[in-house]
Image 1 (cartoon, rainbow over the protein chains, first blue to last red):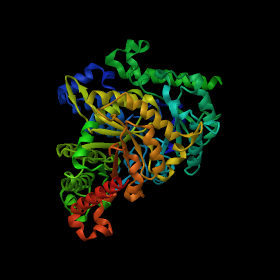
Image 2: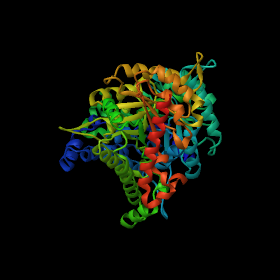
Image 3: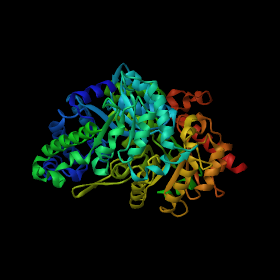
Image 4: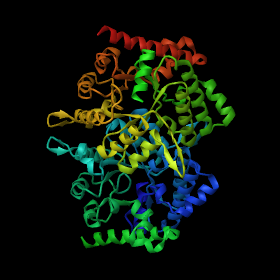
Length: 308
Length: 308
């Protein structure tokens, strides 16, 4: 699946991913009203609004981008109807040719991690038949439990040709509380990065590994170091835009071939119509605002890559 | 909710929790066959088998125990039908008076962690109405992202009177890879434990905090140290039984008042009928085997506590 991701990135010339992280207050009122009219003020109504919103944004942007990253928490908060829309979104994006990165940040041990890997990347055997429970192409994974937590994901990745991005250095202000602590003179995130490199070696696609890493855009100096430690891993970069990460800071997350990183924007794209810059589109044309925001983001990042 | 948990523990005199972590191969064939006959070899059929299995075990044990801990991964692997049964299990156990610890190990940042907290412990506003998406009483949480990831859970805990157990030292063999690394001469898990103590202070029930910790039964020496660091936190202890943790090792996880810890067993209880010790019950009477295994576990742990 890493090869498909890279193929998509080359085809679109866009090392970006759109984060489909819908909050109810991002969704234009006309969509919410219509969904409530049909399903009531219920979890089903909220989930329907999310679905219509997602669908419009995907329809308006899928030809420009290689991948999307739905954040499952935003669906899980609407219970079962929300998760049904998560699954519908995954399926719809894949039919549009997009690679789907399930931002699920799962992580447990042994058979439990295996169950998560099955849920999000694999197939499950039921009697004589096999089913794909959620069927994303990639999943994000938390490393705190060590190799026992990661290995079951690697097994599924190899079998199903899927991939993972392991949290190494997250974009939030307090990520340093544990991740930056010094161990034998080096921060924890570097040790995690070294483990990622080791796991990545065991799970190679053509040029890059099926095992990637998450490194926040908000810590560019650390990104530079981690790029060198994890040479064969794609880096998924959250924190661009709304969280403060700038394109010029991100060039070191990429390799010289222009590959090796994919930059996520969620709110900055899906709620673009709420920004002053795109206000002229109006709430009715929110999806066109998202398309313009994607074009601007691609130009911004490619501009910075070209200028280095 | 910590007060309710403690009340239940005192009432049953049983500091134990039954892990409802159903694997399809634990479920007796007569249940699976019946579910497949009704729903086919489908995710719905598998989920129905899980539900009938859970229900029988809960019916056979609920009067002996204070709490259950369903592991959501085992349900997530059956997709939407699996998660519907997760929710049905949560509701059913609560109607039986049990405290439900959702073993979800979620953790993200800011609004995303808030969405997970809402999904599992809180209520979500949809128009004029409020809904409880999954509605567990406690959730397990991963600390790798730091305070940004934990604070939204604390906010929901305070409002909804719910609780969390934060992963500090997990029971698996490779938990030491990161958790045991020395930082200024002390292991990472101790620093996480200190943070837990700080968060716990801000979120107190009567005698204990709404913020507890997960410390594996397989590392009793570390449990002893962590007990002292996190004085007001309940410790949820996985790893007893099947993973090798013994009752005598666990006495230091408890305070002098006999409170402060709750020991989980999953496979050892729910698949008891597969053990030689309980084989006489047979697959038909698997739930009776589970009841006997619960009685034996309570006697084992209370015996060790009495002997200290």
